Length: 576
Ligand SMILES: Cc1cc2nc3c(=O)[nH]c(=O)nc-3n(C[C@H](O)[C@H](O)[C@H](O)COP(=O)(O)OP(=O)(O)OC[C@H]3O[C@@H](n4cnc5c(N)ncnc54)[C@H](O)[C@@H]3O)c2cc1C
Ligand code: SF4
Image (tube, rainbow, N blue to C red):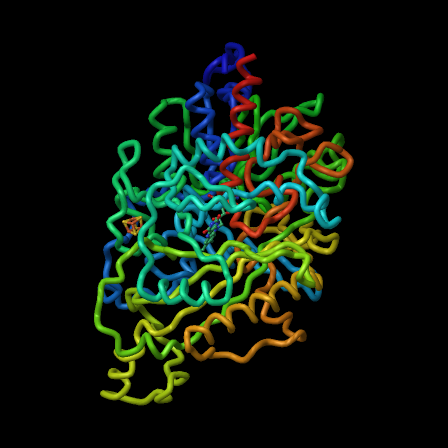
């Protein structure tokens, strides 16, 4: 960028309000998770002066993670707390409910919204399953007539995926599967004992089972050390061997001297001028409660798909009465989440095992990418399977439900013996599949509710269709068949159609996407293929909002790729 640095555009005159004397940054980014962290990294490396507004406090895993704490060091034994629902040592501050920051649901809607409130957002405890979308994932409508195609294809993102693989680091195995593109992989860890059993069962049933693809270093990279297999990735990695936005993107961005970080800054709205261009972002300083404003030539929203939609819908003016960049009425629409269901079973051949070392990364070592031809099925698209089990470190709630094992529970000595016998004899599967965007799943502004700063909140509307229910039925049947193949017993009966075959409520898989989808037509989309708002040329969105569809993949590697591509476009335009 060649624009002036953090100085006023002209010398302040006597009597000029303080606000106008503030610096004009090249770029203001809102949110520091996957999308915002990548934008901060790319733009500050390109020489732009960047200000990053983040609603939560600073948090660096190398400084703040509790990776090596024993659960018994705490009187709570690792149990969850209100701002750490996944356990008191978990790396994410946030949750389904945040005090003073409500959201609402339309009548009949089941939707839960997970929000992080910290530097790096959800990348501090995500599963690091780092999958590229495949060629078919960008052209769903052309394949089966449902949803919409993306205005870009795999070839437009392939080189960005390559660069991200090299920059962040990912392990995996090269398989040559048509819609699961290989990356530039570091060597994968070997399967653990129970994962070998899963692999055998998959081979028997014709289910593809390969090495997982996680953004965890098995070899040193760019001054970062490799993993030492403590299995505690969800707590944040104190040696920076897995991917989190603060450790891998924001720290190097700060080193450029071009990035100013403003934490505890809750963005309220994007401000605009008379010509309809963005002029900056107003925010609440959560430390003081004061209203503040930062000026910038370009605004990048990356506050997560739903929060960025909220910011746009709350940025109303006479020029944009329905919210910024929303003449199409599409902001908030076509919200999707990944479909999901879980099945766990007791595997007798895993009990009374010989104690052995099951150390590994903090995630699965094998997984099953989508393997079936849809022409043989009664639902569109597909899902992948995640595997869990083994000898994780016991914490509060450890082996709850022991009465379901053959001896039926007990007390005292026999109970302790049962824990030892059955520890590690449970294997579970989680399906993660593609939802088709629909008109009934969206978020808008609740006209009657505001948060503790007076900012109007989101109201969710949600409906699964028969497509998703039938897909989840297939997951349930497959997982039960796999457990039976391993000689195991499933704990719970097969759920029926009245329960959507066990589908998790919307939002529960925490992969919310859409709400500001991309497209060529400004009448039916919010941003173009560079994540640039059709109506406001200096406004970009680099979180999951621009996704036109889900895939049978987790989304974050694609959020990073889209953000890298959009940031390069901004830097290129700024340079010119
Ligand atoms: C338990 C868990 C496991 C997951 N596992 C995987 C996985 O294995 N693979 C995968 O691909 N994905 C996974 N995900 C999803 C992944 O974390 C998200 O896709 C990704 O982090 C989204 O990036 P983002 O930048 O859009 O949002 P976030 O990472 O959520 O970052 C948004 C940031 O914006 C900030 N913010 C919000 N509102 C404001 C505001 N008004 N003003 C200022 N700042 C604001 C937040 O504090 C946050 O820091 C997982 C998520 C969870 C919770
Ligand atoms: S398993 Fe590896 S990457 Fe994960 S926290 Fe431990 S050392 Fe870090």
